[in-house]
Amino acid sequence: MVKKISFVSGAAAFLILSLLAPAQTAPAPLNAHALGALEGMLDFCGKVNPQSSDKYEELGKQLTKDQTAKAVAETRNSQEYKDSRDQASKGLEALSTREALVTCKAREK
Image (cartoon, rainbow, N blue to C red; front, side, top):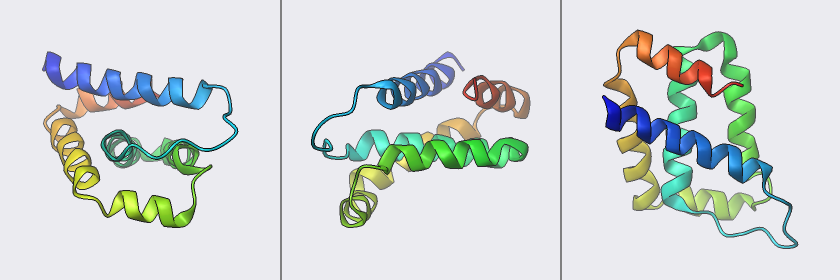
């Protein structure tokens, strides 16, 4: 359980830091592993906590806002992205309903 929660906490911390980072002149290339894990987490939290699904959707949009549609599509089609998203989803699905709700609600703040 500690590994599962620490993975979620680490992914959430990465998300928050990436959103707070100063703007760059040129968008950095997407990291398929990070994007897969974060989008997997946001999708999961949107299902577990549907009353906040709009917040998770907005966070998801922020992850790719400075990227071209082509770059986002290529990243999402990569095996690294798919593997990472799948791993995040499976890890989160292993949490109890209560743990999942607590974890997802903590990410809203």
